[in-house]
Image 1 (cartoon, rainbow, N blue to C red):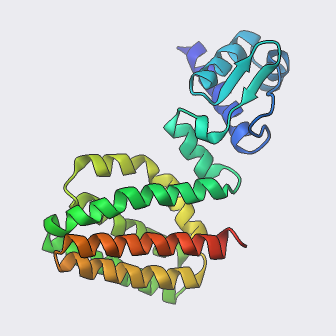
Image 2 (image 1 turned 30 degrees about the vertical axis):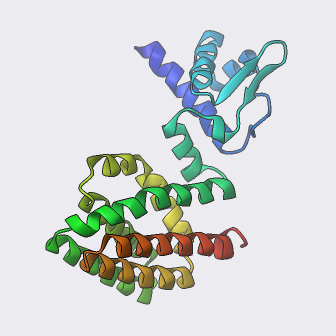
Length: 233
């Protein structure tokens, strides 16, 4: 067990260096001798750690050339991709793809929720919007992000589809990090509050199509704001 734990530690440390940009996609990672000295472990431990990352398609071995870092879109580990998205250097493609994923899942969840949401959940949605408004007025970014995430969480669970909520759970950390990045702009906060009010009203009408369209409009505004305020900054 101790050996496996050490291998895991070295694999995590090497992944951290990759995510930090020390070894960009397409570059060769150092050899076993250099890595064993850097991490103060045996070459066998390094070899097993690299095999772990190779199994996750983070690294690929080319005989006679070395071990290369693969592009993020080839990685097979959800945990590693989420770590890269939340901790790595700014990646415009990853930020946009995250919104695309949210759009696919959340518009459908909102459509389902329109016919299934309870009165208590509708009340909770309105409360979260008011908390967003209050946080916006006093420039309390953490409180704004917390209320924003809570609003969407109510809808995901109100959809009544257990798979939707489970799929979104691993995304919570990266969503929190991205929300803190985008919601730092007062203009984006104002847009979000307006769209959240429309989503709550559409859900209260119990009209699935209106609910889907309201959420889709919010996702489009989120994408537009990301490109205008964050990626162009």
